[in-house]
Image (cartoon, rainbow, N blue to C red; front, side):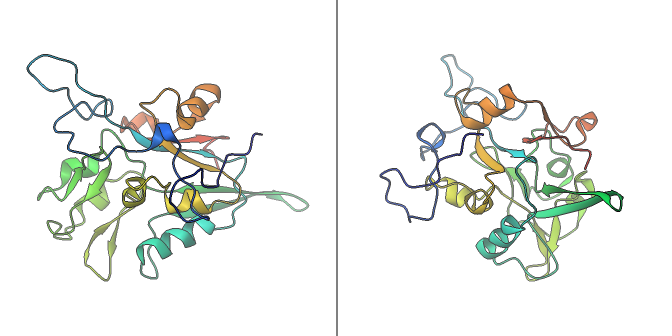
Length: 235
């Protein structure tokens, strides 16, 4: 398989940080109520064509994941996540009987759904789509009622014990806006995690989605997850 470029290409970023490719870099600015990801944003009224916003997500190649937990550790470090809770974690499954056994790994994180039940049930508006159409949490509005936690079919939300508010993966948008990939993607030694814009047909994630058999978790629920897996989700 072709190894993805991880070094800096002339940008003023740390040598160990992989920047987004040119097509994936977010051009920061006031976008207004422009068209968003399918099923989320709507075009501006009043005629004229609206600029297409980003639809950020990931493709996770399970054939490459070696279960090293580097993504979990990187996420913990990036957000100072307290012990006992995780924004991103790894499910390990063992099958078979000795000596014919197999261990498989399934990285788990917020799926940045386009039809998020967690956002619909929030009574205060703390759960919302930010300016980049990424599922987010306004910590100032969150009252810790746990309704969003119960509504998430992927069990990817939790109460942060230090803040007593809901928390989850937010795709490291503070890094993306600086032209960097999320921390878990940057540290993945197997290049199993690929981040990008699904609204760009030429992005790496769009090409992987187009050229491979991909699956999402619980598609029957109609939440439209934006995390796609290569290699099967039955693990």
